[in-house]
Length: 470
Image 1 (cartoon, rainbow, N blue to C red):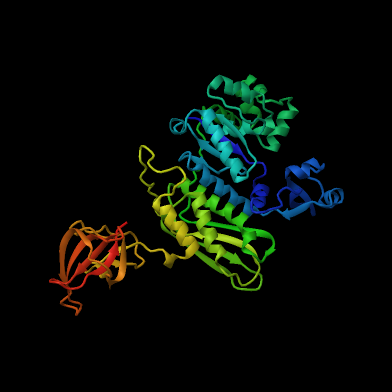
Image 2 (cartoon, rainbow, N blue to C red):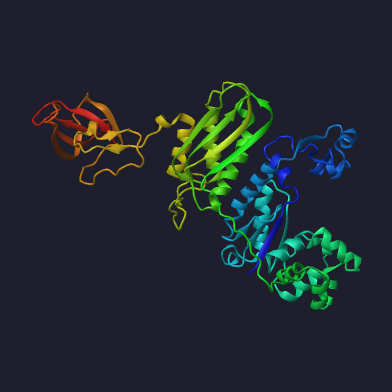
């Protein structure tokens, strides 16, 4: 087995800053300690101004008047932790969020799919950067060893037992054991793990609790470690509070992009798609505005989800300024990738039909774009129907040639008689509903050179035009 530990030292702060446009300003998360507010987590601009974790908030604000801060909320940190668990699930079915501030992934079998470790590591880092989370990554034969090593290293990859023992031996005992146990070890002059391994096991067993030997065995893989594996939920919920109330939809574009990207990562992890979801705009003194987004088929591409959601949001009239924004998706059906040709037959910048249809519906409204459906009726003007149904039936193969443009009703054909190229096709139907017709249809060329679909009643009646061929 091969485990990867992704340490997230600024998980709560990074999660909070993802939905804000002022992330480049000095920011801090604050917690209460001994009755006073202290800095818990800082972004890079705050560190460059001389601030550090554990500093009193009043002192920090006196030193950096532009410091922005928020109180740390454990529930929000757990929500971001779960989001990254869903993201990691796409790389392996064995993902653990058991330890706070890190994600453990078993990637031994995944390397056959994603390529050698350097390639997979680069992909993990690229996607984490895109998601907006600061991270450190270490790979090791055991999950416990990867968690211990990631506290002191970034980018370290160990595949065998002997290098693992040497790397672990250099760690301080504080990287593995609790404060009480470490205090006893320091009293004996034990500072590094290698000093513990140099002692007889019997001596360690007499001087320390049994858990110390068990922990050392777990690090080297001599004892299995029980881990609770993560399973993605059956629904997606995300909420972002805005830094200030906004009255225009344009200010919602950035948080919407973040939310749809998170939704796409969640869907990719559970190998699913989404066909309907709801954007919820929260107001201070008014009922929340719900924007319902529907797709023709299950999708999970971030750019398409964002484009369709933005088009819906842009056309929505908001009754009051927005102070928070949420995305909720209950229906997550299975995702079936569209058929792809082995050789690309379309120009690179052209769109497939499904994507084009979704974009048109998003901009023009769902009722403005409807697929054609065919009724079981031989009368041409009664065959196509524009009801909102999923999927379109194929035109029956027994019919003769049909024009691309069918007129709503036949019109008299003016001018000289057309040149007949194909036909006649006799259509005689409708006696049961009062719409009885008897027509002989022809494919004809008009004197102007246009190809038309014309008919006349049996005999020598006038010619009538019913459609145009391309």
